Image (cartoon, rainbow, N blue to C red; front, side):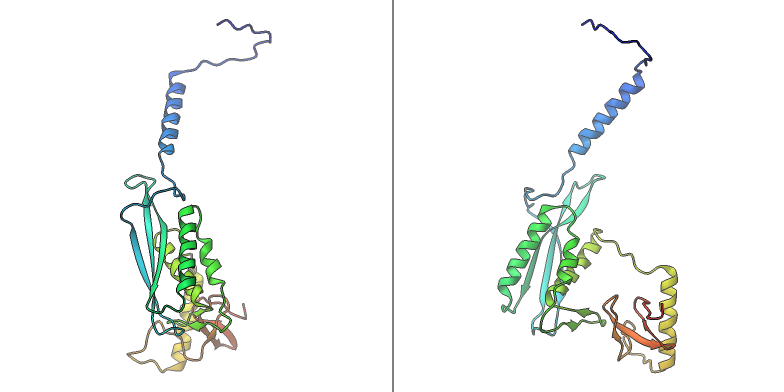
Length: 233
């Protein structure tokens, strides 16, 4: 086919074999990316899923709750392999909360199967407060409600599979916390061999930053022995 050029030619280039090879490589990579399986609500449930179960024992109930989160492994054996939560179940001998637990697990499972970033569920659940008041779990951490502790279990699971990263304290903050805690424990001089090394001093107050009962009076200033937060800056 003949093409008539009415405009002045201001430049030209010759297509080389390297250019064609680069285009073929780009097309092959695009086809490979098209084969990547993404998590969405239409993805069929496999016959077997990997799962983890977390025990929740609260002073609100005589019986414990067992939270089971099953994961699906996408693109196994490839560089795109990822593990994502697919469904959640909560079981307990206590049937008082059966209806809202079933509703909650179905909604959370639907969000899991939708795909995308599901980490927002952690903050949403942990923001639920019980009008009757919360409670302290082992280690002195405050839980505003049973729903919040379910969110805490989901956060633990998301950290285990790598969807949430544990930022933690930097080196300077960690040294400061260790130094302050060592000074306080030395000033008490009441340590015993059978004491829990992870327990915070009796009478410690609740920290507004990390929600742990670990705030004590040190050097005339209220200081958290868990996260290092201090009223004196």
